[in-house]
Structure formats: C-alpha cells, structure tokens
Length: 206
Image (cartoon, rainbow, N blue to C red; front, side, top):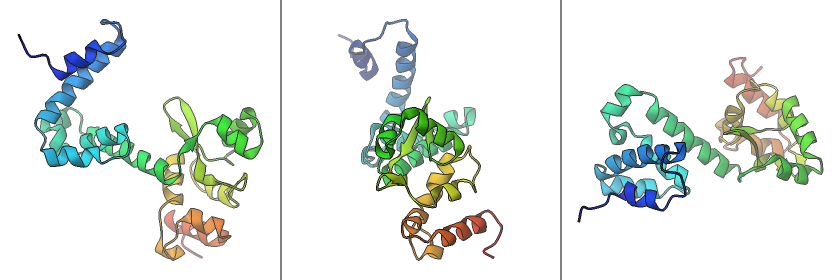
C-alpha cells in the first residue's frame, strides 16, 4: 500500500470541507512545511522547537533564508524578514507579560470596553494590532492604572507604530543604567525617559 504523506494524514483529521479555503490553505502550508522539514538538519529543528509557542517555532524556522530556500527567497525576498518580525513580536508580548483584550484591560482599569477603546484612540493606552484585534500589553498597567508617564512617551511616537513603542519600552538602555524605559517610568524617572526618546529621534539630549 502506498505510504500516506504527513499532510494527507493530517488533512483527514481536520474538520474542513475538502474544497474550502481552509482546506486549500492547509494543503499548501503543510506541503511547504514537509519539504522544508525533510531538508533541514535535526539541530535546526530542535532549535525551532525550543520556542515557547507554535507560532514561534514556525517563525524561527521560516526566518532563516537557508532553511526556506533560495527558490522561495527569490520569489519573495521579504519572507524571512516577515517571519523574523512575527517571532520578534511574540518575544515582545512574552516580555510584556502577555496581551489583554479590551474587556480584560477594562477590568483592570475599572472602565468599560468602550472607554478602553476611547483611550486607545486618544493615545493614552498602548494597544498593538494582532490580526483584526487590538491587544493591550499587560506591562503598561500598575496598581489598576496606566504606568505614570507612559502616555507622554507614546505621544512622542507615530500613533501607527505601537509595536515600535512596545519595543522601545522593553529594551534595556545604558542611558538608563541598564534599565528598560518602562522600569524607569515605574521608578518615576520620567524626564530621563523623555530625553532618551528625543535622543533616539535625533533631537539630542538637551
């Protein structure tokens, strides 16, 4: 009897209509992963499996151009970079202590979901986009409030670059004695953090 491929076996257990978009996507994705996995050293696969999430494992594997293959990178040179971006965002959310829904953020702040959305639009709550949802990094909350000084920092960045803001907040800096800007804000060193923002944006530290 012919050997059934991994993707074929998996498809038998997927609750999707054979001709659905979901099934078509799974066929293509699993076929690509089978080809990649069959040509990747075990050491590389082990390193990918060390990622804390399924998405992280995939992103770590696909972020390496030598793994994806020259044929893919020639068709889509940005594919490894996009995968690295996904992995970096997963890392940021882990450092942030997870990301919350609007309802969960509202429970912490003691306000409604609508009020949470209003604060996000006003730039006083940090929210990152994940698919079609807004997610609120848990690290911005302390004692039932937004960390003091955080809205002032957010206003110094482009509102469309929430991921950049989160990256900035969680990156240790020698200017802050090895602390992250978020740690410095929590310690009350608001002016130091704002000077750091100005320095990064090319305005100097004066």
